Length: 155
Image (cartoon, rainbow, N blue to C red):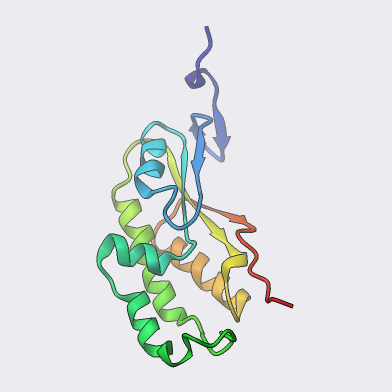
C-alpha cells in the first residue's frame, strides 16, 4: 500500500513530502501548524494577514493599540482614508512573526508565508513590497500570493 511518504515534491534540489497546509489569515493557520508540516517534511504556511494583530496577541506588542491612539479621532467616521499603514511598524511586525516562526523550525520541510495583498490599504505596491521583503529578510523559505479578502469601498 502506498503512503504519502512514497511520493515526493521537488522544489529545486529539495525533496518534500507532498503535504502543503495552512495559509489562512489572521493566525487561523497558526505557526504551530506550519511548523508541524515542516517537521514532517512538507510545506506549512503562515499568513501575513493582520500581522500586527497577530503579533500583539503572540508577542505582547502594542501595534494595534498604538495605531488606535493615533487615529482615535476618526473611529466614528465611516471614511477611513486618513488611516495609513506605518510601513516601518508593518515591517517590524512581519519580521517578528516570521523570524520567531523560522527560529522554531525543525525538520526537512519548508515554511512559506501567504501574502494576502487585497487586505492592504492605501499604497498597496509599497505595502506588499515591504511585507515580502521583511519576510525574506526574516528567513522565510517561500512566498505565496493570494487574493485575500477584497475590501472594496461601499457605493
